[in-house]
Image (cartoon, rainbow, N blue to C red; front, side, top):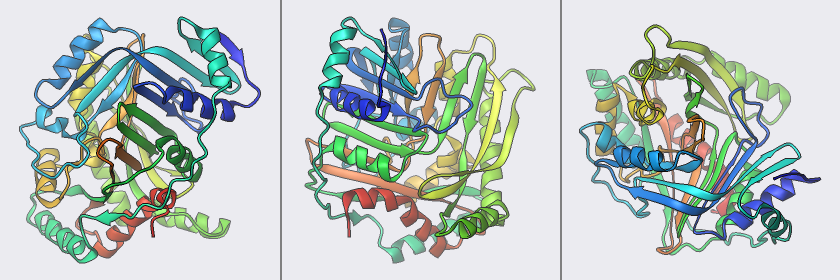
Length: 420
């Protein structure tokens, strides 16, 4: 069924509130960003025909079997710690969230929104549309949440200096070092918090994901991997700068980012890593960098984004293409395995869904997955709330500036939580 709506923004908010009444729901929104590879503005999946939850071991194999049984739309997430399956690695850090490493569901209801057009794929589409129109959007303001950190500033600076010693020795070239901000006994309204986050920091790979009492409120600017026909697309982000107070200052900051030695260095290192990852899934000679050092501006920050593409090897499944590149290079480092091993030593929290990916597989076997960053994760049953931020550490990294970058990336979520 196809309908026209007068106020698509209001309809999306109502549809989100409606979807969140189900045990499982996924809301993906590009927030109007003009992306070459997007198929829709918004996808909403709600209700479960069939689902799968798995932990590292043979999770990709289980998902491949689930996909064969459910060849239509499926949505879900890959947690970062699936690295323990793709490589010989382990994770022993603290986990307060207790999300599975992988979760996907085949939805009962799928809604697409593009401009003023709403397409509903469901058995009772007309009644569903009416139910959404009558939905009340929660207006509860999130009460202030007292945020704690796993690292104080001195500990963080000390850890970065130790990581730089590994770089000097040649153990790694670049890594992504992450820290957790968290709250115990936290009570929030996930829908209201998400709507506030999307207002403060609208991004092209925004997502609200619910699985029972597990919530992911994601304001990601980054695409991990997409498939369009026989083409794979990866768009790693490496390089961050704050927004300016005036147009002139903003433009000057963009130019500084475009010419900043450290930011350029970390971006090109990750581009090389992603190119290498894609060769495992590509037809020979088809991996190419479509754009290098592109600058994209978001409400909170400027980012340096590169685009790497290839043609998918004949006979290789979409699932295998994802496994071949997971976790994404922008959240690991280079060499990839050494960087992941070291970060498990220096970080104090299991990353879980953070640094993972959320997205969908379509009936045509195309897919699109983001990078789970700038995201609030919440276990409502255990009242545990968590978000992490990270930055790239290279030989030229200034520990103080890396610490400031982590706080800059946390700014929007801190604002939503009204944390002092």
